[in-house]
Length: 120
Image (tube, rainbow, N blue to C red):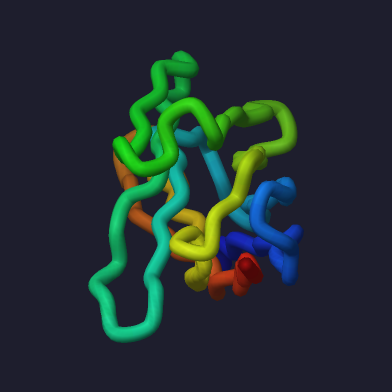
């Protein structure tokens, strides 16, 4: 049973910072890409940032220069450092990971979500 457990969400004022963490556990042979998505009320889930196993990254235009994604392969953990937060960053943030349970079997997993609220 593989689980992704997120932490680090909360309430912060505009201009503040938060750091999200997402740790994977369970039967994991290896990891592939990992990333963060978010969903605001009444909106579709959108990509925030992704990182490959080789540390190549991609960001949504709306967060470039403010958010930084990183990962620790030994801990099977992905992080999202969020600086200069804006009210429009308010959403539930979800962790996503492509994980192999053996050399041939890959599944996509999602975390339970963590709320980020930015007050103006």
